[in-house]
Image (cartoon, rainbow, N blue to C red; front, side, top):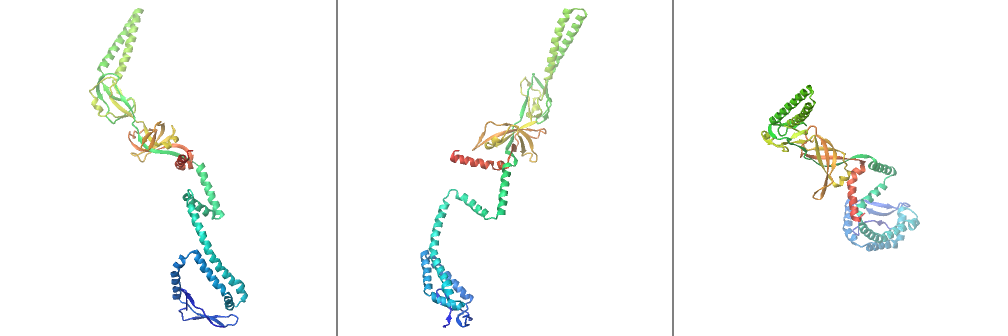
Length: 429
């Protein structure tokens, strides 16, 4: 048998290995040497890799049909020498020649034919896939649905136990959002409104004799703020009292003399002068100008009224009643349906960041105020101010209770309203 020498094939050329070592191939049935080849070195491997890289661009540039034809040509060459390949395989492996001719080599030939045809099929499938991908991108909302589809695929790939765990968690979350109650609050900017002012006006004419308070002083209901000159009123009261006493004495004398007619006349006189005494006492009392409310004196330089002539109805001073203050809370119109009179509220003023003032909704304004593109309503809170620390014009933030609602309603109410508004604008439901 002729000894075969097996070379390497690099860049389409037969090249012997560059090593000095030689390997022999033996016929297992006789032990005879049937082939030999020189061992390759790492340098030979590098040469083969570089040759493959250099050939790749030209091969990649060929069409699927050209690649298919090249593989079919290789299969044709293999088929022409199939008997010789079978003989060599039988000697090399020590197996019956029929095993090579009927089983192994036909399988190799079939594989070459298969991949030669697969080049055309894969090219057609790639074209269809590219077209389908293009159409897929044109599906409405695909950018929204695609992540969901991927998540669904990942979810279905989980094992049953993990899927059951996630489903149970999702159901629990839905139940929590739909059933569990949570307090809802409406928040907005807060401004302390001007307080109720009580005007102090004299009911009788007179000159202010003395002013007993000053601007910014806290006064109580009924406290005397100033006194008017009262000599005329005291003199009138004294005269009325004297005449009253005289009428009583004359009436008693007439009764002592059994003069009923004279006693009756004097009784009438006594009653008249008694009423005059009461009227003069009231007029004298009205010379004391008293505060009608608890609050703070707000009139600037109120002490300068001393010596000034006042007539009934003239304004002497103003007292701010701030025992309870009104706080206006600006509320967006979207939150207006949540507000109810009587609802509790909480105010945090910038002047007192560490304190929270509690109040109650008294009125929800029936008309909005337009500020640019926004419409704002006001919830007016009545806030007790026993320590008199809250002043008109102070600002801050406030929250108004809007009842208990499911957690999902509290968290997702605004996004849901926005989505509903968009759908309505698109479809006109």
